[in-house]
Length: 463
Image 1 (cartoon, helix red, strand yellow):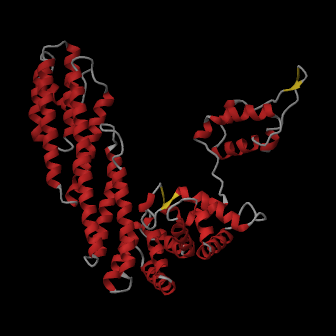
Image 2: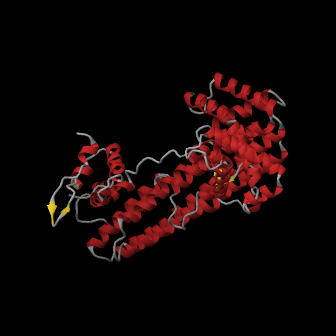
């Protein structure tokens, strides 16, 4: 039975009205995601208001997850070639290759107006591009049109020009992305490298600005950043002057700004609630890209060399001041939770936060060494160990005079804390704390001391 037949209402005369016989919620919930979307779309077309409302209400809560696919509108297709240049508000100090989303609506309205009232709703990309170029040409001739159309948006026509350029290099960018997608990760093939050089030479013969946009669009695309920086560095080292210095400046400037934004956004959460692994997910690629940028620039570009040094300093600040600061905050939260064990028993979730923080700290060791701040990492580990050690000793002393339940909770806290610390500290430095904790809190009449001690060291509970 077709979906439309399944949705056809059955006539049920009740009080002179037709009531729709609709599928039950359980039946709808069993539909696969694709069919659920189909049913939703069909339901929205029903003439019978009662049936339409009933079906839509039944599915609405699931549609937050099983959401119908977003329609590929003409505007969405128009923005796809430069989507990785889109950003939030930029103000008067906009840098090149930053396209604020707030400019898209007036720009698209301008294109529609240029197309005229007879233009189809689904304006083809090529047609939209032609109207954009026509509007840019008109703005150069007619200052009043240029001012009125910009609607107070700063750099409106510079942005329109960059969008025009992005659409002109769309095919070249697509060709390189396909070649890089077929190659092993971060290992561009000989064919990809040869095509890269050919496309750069071809675009440079037309307009150097096309080379700028071609490279920036590739570098800003997450899946191709590393490969493109590798090929760019290789090309500039092997063929001096193959790419204009101004182009390299523009590309590196864009890449550096992009990495700086990611690093700044990584620690945007409230103190004590930041996901440290998410921070590393953002900063680790930034540090790797920084190394590639430094290699590609190779000291030939003084302006960008200075910016690269500032970026490296910025990443060090993110790691030393912000990341390690968050580790310290989460450590303090854990020590307070340990103190409460004797009073009201801290939740396992609070202990898990500390375990995850130590896992992130362990993971960050190589990163700190990469940016030349391994000393700061070691100091933080020692500070964490010292702070936790003091709290564990205080906990053992307080709980030793408490009841059996409090002793058990305190001992479990000691064991779980030291297991977390094992990720960053040598076991030999933690063993005395474990022995001390068990001696003060372990059951002294439960048999062999060492058997009980080993069980607790391995996280086992007594039968």
